[in-house]
Length: 285
Image (cartoon, rainbow, N blue to C red; front, top):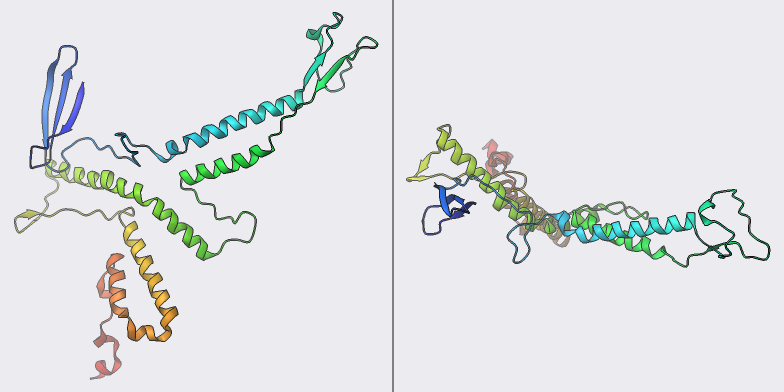
């Protein structure tokens, strides 16, 4: 039995690792991992349902719809097979050997006079509704896998505003999994890399006021929240300009807005020209 668990009695982050002989009930190996990033395993989850320890991915959430479509397609093929091959009946007169009859194009099957011979049984099954059910299930699967359709369903193409709105809704739906992956995967991988680098002596983090500095993730996944904040600010400025018109210049401090956007987008503040540099009169003076 192999187990690794957190020791919550320790103030410092600590994990205890055991290797136990289950039959002999003896501990074969025991060690401790101390420090942030010391745990050698990193198990991240896309999402987690209530009461579950193990996570589940987007495909598992769409598994019921996938099974439904598979069953529906199987029934459709069975119905098509019956329509093409047909279901037949024949009078049991003791003269016709059904094992020697082959149903194919141009086949002539003799039968006794005044007997009904071989007759086809028409099926009353109608699977027209199945196409609508299949489209709904496909849409459910695409939604579970975060696949957006921007085609416009054969009608007028959707506008750029609608595309932006759908992308905003998609970003909100991805907010939970993104935050979980960032917390359980990105942050822990960075901590593990820093720990290994310090153990091997190839990484020496400086200290400020006696405390070691910490690294901050700046991956595209980590920038998603900042980009959403920038979009909200841009929408707010557009609404203010539409309501106030030219008066937005006297009402809103545009320079403060630009500085805030530059900070969120991680751009240098040196790009912003100060008032003394941008005013020709002050430059001449």
